[in-house]
Image (cartoon, rainbow over all chains, first blue to last red; front, side, top):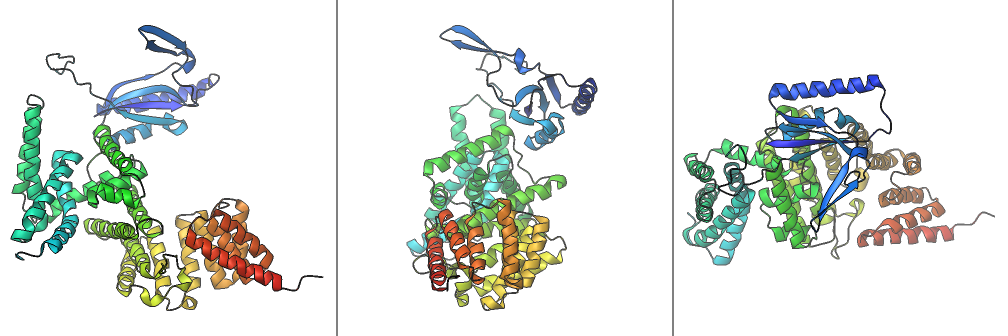
Length: 126
Length: 432
Protein backbone atom coordinates (compact mmCIF):
# COMPACT_ATOMS: atom_id res chain seq x y z
CA UNK A 1 0.00 0.00 0.00
CA UNK A 2 1.00 3.59 -0.45
CA UNK A 3 0.98 6.03 2.43
CA UNK A 4 1.66 9.74 2.79
CA UNK A 5 3.61 10.51 5.94
CA UNK A 6 2.78 14.14 6.70
CA UNK A 7 5.26 15.86 8.96
CA UNK A 8 3.70 18.41 11.32
CA UNK A 9 5.61 20.58 13.72
CA UNK A 10 6.09 24.04 15.15
CA UNK A 11 7.43 26.56 12.68
CA UNK A 12 10.41 28.36 14.15
CA UNK A 13 9.95 32.14 14.19
CA UNK A 14 13.56 32.61 13.14
CA UNK A 15 16.08 30.50 11.32
CA UNK A 16 17.79 27.84 13.42
CA UNK A 17 21.58 28.01 13.92
CA UNK A 18 23.44 26.59 10.96
CA UNK A 19 24.95 23.62 12.80
CA UNK A 20 21.51 22.53 14.04
CA UNK A 21 20.07 22.83 10.53
CA UNK A 22 22.94 20.77 9.16
CA UNK A 23 22.39 18.08 11.79
CA UNK A 24 18.69 17.91 10.94
CA UNK A 25 19.38 17.67 7.20
CA UNK A 26 21.79 14.81 7.89
CA UNK A 27 19.12 12.98 9.90
CA UNK A 28 16.57 13.41 7.13
CA UNK A 29 19.19 12.38 4.57
CA UNK A 30 19.83 9.14 6.47
CA UNK A 31 16.11 8.32 6.67
CA UNK A 32 15.64 9.08 2.97
CA UNK A 33 18.58 6.82 2.13
CA UNK A 34 17.04 4.06 4.27
CA UNK A 35 13.74 4.30 2.39
CA UNK A 36 15.50 4.32 -1.00
CA UNK A 37 17.57 1.27 -0.09
CA UNK A 38 14.36 -0.63 0.71
CA UNK A 39 12.64 0.57 -2.41
CA UNK A 40 9.97 2.16 -0.24
CA UNK A 41 10.59 5.78 -1.30
CA UNK A 42 8.06 7.08 -3.81
CA UNK A 43 8.46 10.80 -3.18
CA UNK A 44 9.29 13.25 -0.46
CA UNK A 45 9.75 16.97 -0.11
CA UNK A 46 10.26 19.60 2.52
CA UNK A 47 7.95 22.60 2.33
CA UNK A 48 8.64 26.33 2.67
CA UNK A 49 7.01 27.79 5.81
CA UNK A 50 3.27 28.55 5.94
CA UNK A 51 4.05 32.28 5.60
CA UNK A 52 4.63 31.51 1.92
CA UNK A 53 1.37 29.58 1.51
CA UNK A 54 -1.55 30.55 -0.68
CA UNK A 55 -4.94 28.95 -0.24
CA UNK A 56 -7.20 28.57 -3.24
CA UNK A 57 -10.90 27.84 -3.39
CA UNK A 58 -13.43 28.16 -6.18
CA UNK A 59 -16.74 29.76 -5.23
CA UNK A 60 -19.48 30.08 -7.88
CA UNK A 61 -16.90 29.56 -10.60
CA UNK A 62 -14.62 32.28 -9.26
CA UNK A 63 -11.17 31.48 -8.04
CA UNK A 64 -10.57 33.00 -4.65
CA UNK A 65 -7.15 33.09 -3.14
CA UNK A 66 -6.16 33.95 0.38
CA UNK A 67 -2.79 34.47 1.89
CA UNK A 68 -1.66 31.82 4.34
CA UNK A 69 -2.41 28.18 5.08
CA UNK A 70 -5.89 26.61 5.05
CA UNK A 71 -6.02 26.44 8.82
CA UNK A 72 -4.02 28.43 11.34
CA UNK A 73 -2.85 25.80 13.78
CA UNK A 74 0.05 25.51 16.18
CA UNK A 75 1.55 22.67 14.18
CA UNK A 76 2.01 23.22 10.48
CA UNK A 77 2.67 20.82 7.62
CA UNK A 78 6.40 21.08 7.02
CA UNK A 79 7.04 18.26 4.60
CA UNK A 80 6.01 14.80 3.55
CA UNK A 81 7.11 11.40 2.35
CA UNK A 82 5.19 9.18 0.00
CA UNK A 83 6.14 5.59 0.81
CA UNK A 84 5.33 2.03 -0.15
CA UNK A 85 4.64 -0.13 2.92
CA UNK A 86 3.12 -3.58 3.29
CA UNK A 87 0.60 -2.44 5.86
CA UNK A 88 -0.16 0.17 8.50
CA UNK A 89 2.28 -1.42 10.95
CA UNK A 90 5.16 -0.86 8.57
CA UNK A 91 3.98 2.68 7.82
CA UNK A 92 3.91 3.37 11.57
CA UNK A 93 7.46 2.04 11.83
CA UNK A 94 8.64 4.37 9.04
CA UNK A 95 6.81 7.33 10.56
CA UNK A 96 8.49 6.73 13.92
CA UNK A 97 11.89 6.95 12.20
CA UNK A 98 11.28 10.45 10.83
CA UNK A 99 13.27 13.02 12.84
CA UNK A 100 10.20 15.29 12.95
CA UNK A 101 8.30 12.63 14.93
CA UNK A 102 10.40 13.54 17.99
CA UNK A 103 9.65 17.27 17.76
CA UNK A 104 6.18 17.27 16.28
CA UNK A 105 3.95 14.55 14.91
CA UNK A 106 3.47 12.52 11.76
CA UNK A 107 0.05 11.97 10.27
CA UNK A 108 -0.23 8.78 8.24
CA UNK A 109 -2.74 8.88 5.42
CA UNK A 110 -3.31 5.95 3.06
CA UNK A 111 -3.26 6.97 -0.57
CA UNK A 112 -6.70 6.75 -2.13
CA UNK A 113 -6.61 5.07 -5.51
CA UNK A 114 -8.91 7.11 -7.70
CA UNK A 115 -11.01 4.68 -9.75
CA UNK A 116 -11.11 5.66 -13.42
CA UNK A 117 -14.29 5.05 -15.41
CA UNK A 118 -13.89 2.07 -17.76
CA UNK A 119 -12.49 3.02 -21.18
CA UNK A 120 -10.47 5.86 -19.69
CA UNK A 121 -7.07 4.47 -18.92
CA UNK A 122 -6.15 7.52 -16.88
CA UNK A 123 -3.12 5.92 -15.33
CA UNK A 124 -0.15 4.12 -16.74
CA UNK A 125 -1.33 0.89 -15.09
CA UNK A 126 -4.16 0.68 -17.65
CA UNK B 1 -27.14 -36.95 16.71
CA UNK B 2 -29.46 -35.64 19.43
CA UNK B 3 -32.68 -36.03 17.44
CA UNK B 4 -35.60 -33.58 17.48
CA UNK B 5 -35.88 -31.35 20.58
CA UNK B 6 -38.62 -28.95 21.69
CA UNK B 7 -38.46 -25.82 19.54
CA UNK B 8 -37.98 -23.16 22.25
CA UNK B 9 -35.10 -24.93 23.94
CA UNK B 10 -33.68 -25.85 20.53
CA UNK B 11 -33.62 -22.16 19.68
CA UNK B 12 -31.67 -21.44 22.86
CA UNK B 13 -29.28 -24.29 22.18
CA UNK B 14 -28.58 -23.07 18.65
CA UNK B 15 -28.13 -19.57 20.01
CA UNK B 16 -25.62 -20.63 22.64
CA UNK B 17 -23.65 -23.04 20.47
CA UNK B 18 -23.61 -20.53 17.68
CA UNK B 19 -22.21 -17.81 19.88
CA UNK B 20 -19.47 -20.10 21.10
CA UNK B 21 -18.53 -21.39 17.69
CA UNK B 22 -19.13 -18.57 15.24
CA UNK B 23 -15.93 -16.66 16.04
CA UNK B 24 -13.93 -19.31 14.22
CA UNK B 25 -16.02 -19.07 11.08
CA UNK B 26 -15.87 -15.27 11.05
CA UNK B 27 -12.11 -15.32 11.56
CA UNK B 28 -11.51 -17.83 8.78
CA UNK B 29 -13.76 -16.05 6.30
CA UNK B 30 -12.19 -12.67 7.06
CA UNK B 31 -8.77 -14.17 6.36
CA UNK B 32 -9.90 -15.49 3.00
CA UNK B 33 -12.17 -12.62 1.98
CA UNK B 34 -10.41 -9.70 3.62
CA UNK B 35 -13.92 -8.31 4.10
CA UNK B 36 -15.51 -8.07 7.55
CA UNK B 37 -19.02 -7.32 6.29
CA UNK B 38 -19.24 -10.16 3.80
CA UNK B 39 -17.86 -12.57 6.40
CA UNK B 40 -20.39 -11.44 9.02
CA UNK B 41 -23.30 -11.59 6.56
CA UNK B 42 -22.34 -15.11 5.49
CA UNK B 43 -22.08 -16.29 9.10
CA UNK B 44 -25.43 -14.67 9.86
CA UNK B 45 -26.89 -16.66 6.93
CA UNK B 46 -25.40 -19.80 8.45
CA UNK B 47 -27.07 -18.96 11.78
CA UNK B 48 -30.47 -18.78 10.10
CA UNK B 49 -29.75 -22.09 8.39
CA UNK B 50 -28.82 -23.60 11.75
CA UNK B 51 -32.09 -22.38 13.28
CA UNK B 52 -33.95 -24.09 10.45
CA UNK B 53 -32.11 -27.40 10.38
CA UNK B 54 -30.60 -28.17 13.79
CA UNK B 55 -33.89 -28.48 15.70
CA UNK B 56 -35.14 -30.90 13.03
CA UNK B 57 -32.07 -32.93 12.13
CA UNK B 58 -30.15 -32.56 15.37
CA UNK B 59 -26.98 -30.66 16.19
CA UNK B 60 -24.13 -31.64 13.87
CA UNK B 61 -21.25 -33.63 15.28
CA UNK B 62 -18.87 -30.69 14.91
CA UNK B 63 -20.92 -27.47 15.05
CA UNK B 64 -17.91 -25.23 14.43
CA UNK B 65 -16.99 -27.01 11.20
CA UNK B 66 -20.64 -27.03 10.10
CA UNK B 67 -20.92 -23.27 10.62
CA UNK B 68 -17.69 -22.58 8.75
CA UNK B 69 -18.70 -24.81 5.81
CA UNK B 70 -22.21 -23.36 5.60
CA UNK B 71 -20.98 -19.77 5.91
CA UNK B 72 -18.42 -20.48 3.19
CA UNK B 73 -21.16 -21.66 0.81
CA UNK B 74 -23.28 -18.62 1.58
CA UNK B 75 -20.28 -16.37 0.98
CA UNK B 76 -19.83 -17.93 -2.47
CA UNK B 77 -23.55 -17.35 -3.20
CA UNK B 78 -23.28 -13.75 -2.13
CA UNK B 79 -20.13 -13.20 -4.18
CA UNK B 80 -21.84 -14.64 -7.28
CA UNK B 81 -24.82 -12.37 -6.80
CA UNK B 82 -22.52 -9.40 -6.46
CA UNK B 83 -20.56 -10.44 -9.51
CA UNK B 84 -23.63 -10.41 -11.67
CA UNK B 85 -24.05 -6.78 -10.70
CA UNK B 86 -20.51 -5.76 -11.53
CA UNK B 87 -19.62 -8.30 -14.15
CA UNK B 88 -16.59 -6.66 -15.64
CA UNK B 89 -14.79 -5.39 -12.59
CA UNK B 90 -12.19 -7.44 -10.82
CA UNK B 91 -13.25 -10.78 -12.25
CA UNK B 92 -9.83 -12.24 -11.61
CA UNK B 93 -9.83 -11.08 -8.01
CA UNK B 94 -13.25 -12.56 -7.42
CA UNK B 95 -12.33 -15.87 -9.00
CA UNK B 96 -9.25 -16.05 -6.82
CA UNK B 97 -11.38 -15.36 -3.74
CA UNK B 98 -13.87 -17.99 -4.75
CA UNK B 99 -11.22 -20.63 -5.19
CA UNK B 100 -9.70 -19.66 -1.85
CA UNK B 101 -13.15 -20.05 -0.28
CA UNK B 102 -13.47 -23.51 -1.79
CA UNK B 103 -10.09 -24.47 -0.40
CA UNK B 104 -11.47 -23.93 3.12
CA UNK B 105 -13.32 -27.18 2.60
CA UNK B 106 -10.10 -28.94 1.70
CA UNK B 107 -8.66 -27.92 5.05
CA UNK B 108 -9.44 -30.60 7.60
CA UNK B 109 -12.34 -29.50 9.77
CA UNK B 110 -10.42 -30.31 12.91
CA UNK B 111 -7.39 -28.37 11.80
CA UNK B 112 -7.27 -26.62 15.14
CA UNK B 113 -4.00 -24.83 14.46
CA UNK B 114 -5.36 -23.17 11.36
CA UNK B 115 -8.52 -21.98 13.07
CA UNK B 116 -6.52 -20.85 16.08
CA UNK B 117 -4.27 -18.76 13.84
CA UNK B 118 -7.27 -17.12 12.19
CA UNK B 119 -8.84 -16.17 15.48
CA UNK B 120 -5.61 -14.90 16.97
CA UNK B 121 -5.04 -12.71 13.92
CA UNK B 122 -8.54 -11.33 14.25
CA UNK B 123 -8.03 -10.45 17.93
CA UNK B 124 -5.00 -8.38 17.06
CA UNK B 125 -6.75 -6.68 14.16
CA UNK B 126 -9.80 -5.74 16.25
CA UNK B 127 -7.58 -4.39 19.05
CA UNK B 128 -5.11 -2.53 16.82
CA UNK B 129 -3.87 0.70 18.44
CA UNK B 130 -4.68 2.70 15.29
CA UNK B 131 -8.39 2.22 16.08
CA UNK B 132 -10.12 4.37 18.68
CA UNK B 133 -10.54 2.54 22.00
CA UNK B 134 -14.34 2.50 21.84
CA UNK B 135 -14.14 1.11 18.31
CA UNK B 136 -11.80 -1.67 19.46
CA UNK B 137 -14.22 -2.65 22.21
CA UNK B 138 -17.25 -2.65 19.92
CA UNK B 139 -15.47 -4.51 17.12
CA UNK B 140 -14.09 -7.17 19.46
CA UNK B 141 -17.53 -7.85 20.93
CA UNK B 142 -19.24 -7.85 17.54
CA UNK B 143 -16.72 -9.88 15.57
CA UNK B 144 -15.14 -12.22 18.09
CA UNK B 145 -17.78 -12.24 20.77
CA UNK B 146 -20.69 -12.60 18.43
CA UNK B 147 -22.81 -10.07 20.33
CA UNK B 148 -25.35 -8.37 18.11
CA UNK B 149 -25.21 -4.64 17.48
CA UNK B 150 -28.37 -4.00 19.57
CA UNK B 151 -26.91 -6.05 22.44
CA UNK B 152 -23.68 -4.06 22.47
CA UNK B 153 -25.59 -0.77 22.20
CA UNK B 154 -27.74 -1.73 25.18
CA UNK B 155 -24.71 -2.75 27.25
CA UNK B 156 -23.02 0.61 26.68
CA UNK B 157 -26.26 2.59 26.95
CA UNK B 158 -25.78 3.97 23.45
CA UNK B 159 -28.33 4.51 20.70
CA UNK B 160 -28.12 1.65 18.22
CA UNK B 161 -27.32 3.84 15.19
CA UNK B 162 -24.38 5.38 17.07
CA UNK B 163 -22.89 1.98 17.71
CA UNK B 164 -23.62 0.74 14.19
CA UNK B 165 -21.89 3.82 12.79
CA UNK B 166 -18.89 3.21 15.05
CA UNK B 167 -18.57 -0.34 13.70
CA UNK B 168 -18.88 0.80 10.08
CA UNK B 169 -16.15 3.40 10.58
CA UNK B 170 -13.82 0.93 12.29
CA UNK B 171 -14.21 -1.65 9.51
CA UNK B 172 -13.68 1.01 6.89
CA UNK B 173 -10.50 2.16 8.58
CA UNK B 174 -9.17 -1.40 8.80
CA UNK B 175 -9.64 -1.76 5.06
CA UNK B 176 -8.58 1.70 3.91
CA UNK B 177 -5.62 2.22 6.24
CA UNK B 178 -4.21 -1.26 5.71
CA UNK B 179 -4.39 -2.44 9.31
CA UNK B 180 -2.78 -5.87 9.03
CA UNK B 181 -4.60 -9.11 9.67
CA UNK B 182 -1.85 -11.03 11.38
CA UNK B 183 -0.25 -11.95 14.67
CA UNK B 184 2.28 -9.19 15.35
CA UNK B 185 5.97 -10.05 14.90
CA UNK B 186 7.97 -10.75 18.09
CA UNK B 187 9.20 -7.16 18.50
CA UNK B 188 5.60 -5.86 18.58
CA UNK B 189 3.91 -8.80 20.29
CA UNK B 190 4.31 -7.79 23.95
CA UNK B 191 3.03 -4.26 23.33
CA UNK B 192 0.12 -5.40 21.17
CA UNK B 193 -0.87 -8.21 23.52
CA UNK B 194 -1.00 -5.59 26.26
CA UNK B 195 -3.44 -3.66 24.09
CA UNK B 196 -5.62 -6.74 23.58
CA UNK B 197 -5.73 -7.44 27.32
CA UNK B 198 -6.60 -3.81 27.97
CA UNK B 199 -9.64 -4.08 25.68
CA UNK B 200 -10.78 -7.31 27.34
CA UNK B 201 -10.37 -5.83 30.82
CA UNK B 202 -12.36 -2.77 29.78
CA UNK B 203 -15.18 -5.01 28.55
CA UNK B 204 -15.12 -6.94 31.81
CA UNK B 205 -15.20 -3.80 33.93
CA UNK B 206 -17.99 -2.32 31.89
CA UNK B 207 -20.00 -5.39 32.81
CA UNK B 208 -18.84 -5.46 36.42
CA UNK B 209 -18.34 -1.98 37.83
CA UNK B 210 -21.30 -0.01 36.62
CA UNK B 211 -24.50 -0.71 38.48
CA UNK B 212 -26.70 1.17 36.05
CA UNK B 213 -28.23 -0.36 32.96
CA UNK B 214 -29.64 -3.76 32.21
CA UNK B 215 -28.01 -6.14 34.69
CA UNK B 216 -28.57 -9.18 32.50
CA UNK B 217 -26.73 -7.56 29.60
CA UNK B 218 -23.92 -6.47 31.92
CA UNK B 219 -23.52 -10.00 33.23
CA UNK B 220 -23.29 -11.16 29.63
CA UNK B 221 -20.56 -8.59 28.96
CA UNK B 222 -18.39 -9.85 31.82
CA UNK B 223 -19.00 -13.45 30.79
CA UNK B 224 -17.98 -12.57 27.23
CA UNK B 225 -14.77 -10.91 28.44
CA UNK B 226 -13.91 -14.01 30.46
CA UNK B 227 -14.68 -16.27 27.51
CA UNK B 228 -12.55 -14.23 25.11
CA UNK B 229 -9.66 -14.09 27.59
CA UNK B 230 -9.87 -17.89 27.79
CA UNK B 231 -9.66 -17.99 24.00
CA UNK B 232 -6.56 -15.76 23.99
CA UNK B 233 -5.05 -18.00 26.66
CA UNK B 234 -5.69 -21.06 24.50
CA UNK B 235 -4.16 -19.33 21.50
CA UNK B 236 -1.07 -17.99 23.31
CA UNK B 237 -0.66 -20.56 26.06
CA UNK B 238 1.49 -19.79 29.07
CA UNK B 239 1.56 -15.99 28.67
CA UNK B 240 1.60 -14.98 32.35
CA UNK B 241 -0.25 -11.68 31.93
CA UNK B 242 -3.07 -13.45 30.03
CA UNK B 243 -3.34 -15.94 32.91
CA UNK B 244 -3.16 -13.04 35.34
CA UNK B 245 -6.00 -11.16 33.66
CA UNK B 246 -8.15 -14.28 33.47
CA UNK B 247 -7.52 -14.89 37.18
CA UNK B 248 -8.28 -11.27 38.02
CA UNK B 249 -11.61 -11.45 36.20
CA UNK B 250 -12.62 -14.74 37.81
CA UNK B 251 -11.66 -13.61 41.31
CA UNK B 252 -13.79 -10.49 40.97
CA UNK B 253 -16.63 -12.19 39.16
CA UNK B 254 -16.80 -14.72 42.02
CA UNK B 255 -18.19 -11.92 44.24
CA UNK B 256 -20.80 -10.78 41.73
CA UNK B 257 -23.85 -12.28 43.53
CA UNK B 258 -22.78 -10.90 46.91
CA UNK B 259 -21.96 -7.35 45.87
CA UNK B 260 -25.46 -6.25 44.91
CA UNK B 261 -28.33 -6.21 47.42
CA UNK B 262 -31.94 -7.11 46.75
CA UNK B 263 -32.73 -3.47 45.98
CA UNK B 264 -29.88 -3.30 43.46
CA UNK B 265 -27.68 -1.39 45.90
CA UNK B 266 -23.93 -1.90 45.96
CA UNK B 267 -22.61 -3.86 48.96
CA UNK B 268 -19.02 -3.08 50.01
CA UNK B 269 -16.48 -5.88 50.35
CA UNK B 270 -16.54 -5.71 54.17
CA UNK B 271 -20.32 -6.13 54.31
CA UNK B 272 -20.71 -8.90 51.76
CA UNK B 273 -22.13 -12.30 52.68
CA UNK B 274 -19.03 -14.31 51.85
CA UNK B 275 -20.96 -17.58 51.76
CA UNK B 276 -22.44 -16.30 48.49
CA UNK B 277 -19.03 -16.06 46.82
CA UNK B 278 -18.50 -18.55 44.02
CA UNK B 279 -15.94 -21.00 45.48
CA UNK B 280 -15.35 -22.72 42.15
CA UNK B 281 -14.37 -19.47 40.44
CA UNK B 282 -12.14 -18.51 43.36
CA UNK B 283 -10.36 -21.87 43.24
CA UNK B 284 -9.81 -21.56 39.49
CA UNK B 285 -8.58 -17.97 39.86
CA UNK B 286 -6.17 -18.91 42.63
CA UNK B 287 -4.73 -21.79 40.60
CA UNK B 288 -4.29 -19.45 37.62
CA UNK B 289 -2.46 -16.82 39.68
CA UNK B 290 -0.11 -19.48 40.99
CA UNK B 291 0.74 -20.87 37.57
CA UNK B 292 1.15 -17.34 36.18
CA UNK B 293 3.57 -16.32 38.92
CA UNK B 294 5.55 -19.55 38.43
CA UNK B 295 6.49 -18.35 34.93
CA UNK B 296 8.64 -15.70 36.61
CA UNK B 297 7.53 -12.71 34.51
CA UNK B 298 5.28 -10.79 36.91
CA UNK B 299 3.10 -8.00 35.54
CA UNK B 300 0.32 -5.66 36.68
CA UNK B 301 -2.54 -8.10 35.98
CA UNK B 302 -0.84 -10.89 37.92
CA UNK B 303 -0.25 -8.61 40.91
CA UNK B 304 -3.84 -7.32 40.88
CA UNK B 305 -5.06 -10.92 40.66
CA UNK B 306 -2.88 -11.87 43.63
CA UNK B 307 -4.45 -9.00 45.61
CA UNK B 308 -7.95 -10.15 44.64
CA UNK B 309 -7.03 -13.71 45.65
CA UNK B 310 -5.98 -12.54 49.12
CA UNK B 311 -9.34 -10.80 49.57
CA UNK B 312 -11.21 -13.88 48.36
CA UNK B 313 -9.21 -16.13 50.68
CA UNK B 314 -10.20 -14.30 53.89
CA UNK B 315 -13.10 -16.01 55.66
CA UNK B 316 -14.08 -12.70 57.29
CA UNK B 317 -12.86 -9.13 56.67
CA UNK B 318 -10.62 -9.20 59.78
CA UNK B 319 -8.85 -12.29 58.42
CA UNK B 320 -7.60 -10.31 55.42
CA UNK B 321 -3.81 -10.40 55.06
CA UNK B 322 -3.33 -6.62 54.82
CA UNK B 323 0.49 -6.57 55.20
CA UNK B 324 0.72 -8.91 52.19
CA UNK B 325 -1.77 -6.81 50.21
CA UNK B 326 0.21 -3.66 51.03
CA UNK B 327 3.41 -5.22 49.76
CA UNK B 328 1.65 -6.30 46.54
CA UNK B 329 0.45 -2.71 46.02
CA UNK B 330 4.06 -1.61 46.44
CA UNK B 331 5.04 -4.06 43.71
CA UNK B 332 2.19 -2.76 41.52
CA UNK B 333 3.31 0.82 42.11
CA UNK B 334 6.79 -0.08 40.90
CA UNK B 335 5.36 -1.63 37.68
CA UNK B 336 2.54 0.77 36.91
CA UNK B 337 2.70 3.89 39.06
CA UNK B 338 -0.50 5.92 39.32
CA UNK B 339 -2.20 8.05 41.96
CA UNK B 340 -5.00 5.46 42.24
CA UNK B 341 -2.51 2.67 43.02
CA UNK B 342 -0.95 5.03 45.56
CA UNK B 343 -4.37 5.50 47.18
CA UNK B 344 -5.01 1.76 47.32
CA UNK B 345 -1.59 1.26 48.88
CA UNK B 346 -2.39 3.89 51.53
CA UNK B 347 -5.70 2.15 52.30
CA UNK B 348 -3.93 -1.22 52.69
CA UNK B 349 -1.23 0.34 54.90
CA UNK B 350 -3.97 1.88 57.06
CA UNK B 351 -5.39 -1.59 57.61
CA UNK B 352 -1.97 -3.17 58.23
CA UNK B 353 -0.23 -0.48 60.30
CA UNK B 354 -3.09 1.63 61.64
CA UNK B 355 -5.18 4.53 60.32
CA UNK B 356 -2.67 7.26 61.30
CA UNK B 357 0.05 5.88 58.99
CA UNK B 358 -2.42 5.46 56.13
CA UNK B 359 -3.84 8.93 56.67
CA UNK B 360 -0.39 10.52 56.40
CA UNK B 361 0.04 8.86 52.99
CA UNK B 362 -3.42 9.95 51.85
CA UNK B 363 -2.76 13.52 52.96
CA UNK B 364 0.29 13.44 50.72
CA UNK B 365 -1.85 12.28 47.77
CA UNK B 366 -4.47 14.94 48.53
CA UNK B 367 -1.75 17.62 48.64
CA UNK B 368 -0.57 16.64 45.14
CA UNK B 369 -4.05 17.51 43.83
CA UNK B 370 -4.00 14.66 41.27
CA UNK B 371 -7.11 13.01 42.69
CA UNK B 372 -8.95 16.15 43.78
CA UNK B 373 -12.00 15.15 41.72
CA UNK B 374 -11.79 11.43 42.58
CA UNK B 375 -14.55 10.68 45.12
CA UNK B 376 -12.82 7.57 46.51
CA UNK B 377 -9.87 9.63 47.78
CA UNK B 378 -12.21 11.75 49.91
CA UNK B 379 -14.28 8.76 51.01
CA UNK B 380 -11.14 6.80 52.02
CA UNK B 381 -9.69 9.79 53.89
CA UNK B 382 -13.04 10.34 55.59
CA UNK B 383 -13.07 6.73 56.73
CA UNK B 384 -9.61 7.00 58.33
CA UNK B 385 -10.52 10.31 60.00
CA UNK B 386 -13.67 8.65 61.34
CA UNK B 387 -11.64 5.80 62.78
CA UNK B 388 -9.28 8.34 64.38
CA UNK B 389 -12.36 10.07 65.84
CA UNK B 390 -11.48 13.35 64.12
CA UNK B 391 -15.18 13.99 63.56
CA UNK B 392 -15.08 17.50 62.20
CA UNK B 393 -12.51 16.72 59.47
CA UNK B 394 -14.34 13.47 58.69
CA UNK B 395 -17.57 15.45 58.17
CA UNK B 396 -15.85 17.74 55.67
CA UNK B 397 -14.28 14.83 53.77
CA UNK B 398 -17.57 12.87 53.54
CA UNK B 399 -19.22 16.05 52.28
CA UNK B 400 -16.61 16.44 49.55
CA UNK B 401 -16.96 12.75 48.55
CA UNK B 402 -20.74 13.21 48.30
CA UNK B 403 -20.33 16.23 46.04
CA UNK B 404 -18.40 14.07 43.58
CA UNK B 405 -20.52 10.89 43.68
CA UNK B 406 -23.44 10.24 41.33
CA UNK B 407 -23.98 6.56 41.98
CA UNK B 408 -27.14 6.16 44.11
CA UNK B 409 -25.91 3.20 46.19
CA UNK B 410 -22.61 4.90 46.98
CA UNK B 411 -24.39 8.14 47.88
CA UNK B 412 -26.66 6.29 50.30
CA UNK B 413 -23.62 4.74 51.98
CA UNK B 414 -21.77 8.06 52.27
CA UNK B 415 -24.87 9.83 53.62
CA UNK B 416 -25.24 7.16 56.29
CA UNK B 417 -21.63 7.63 57.36
CA UNK B 418 -21.91 11.41 57.26
CA UNK B 419 -24.89 11.25 59.62
CA UNK B 420 -22.90 8.97 61.97
CA UNK B 421 -19.91 11.29 62.23
CA UNK B 422 -22.12 14.36 62.53
CA UNK B 423 -23.93 12.75 65.46
CA UNK B 424 -20.65 11.71 67.12
CA UNK B 425 -19.32 15.22 66.62
CA UNK B 426 -22.40 16.70 68.30
CA UNK B 427 -22.19 14.27 71.22
CA UNK B 428 -18.54 15.04 71.97
CA UNK B 429 -17.83 17.57 74.74
CA UNK B 430 -16.66 20.75 73.04
CA UNK B 431 -13.35 22.29 74.02
CA UNK B 432 -13.90 25.05 76.60
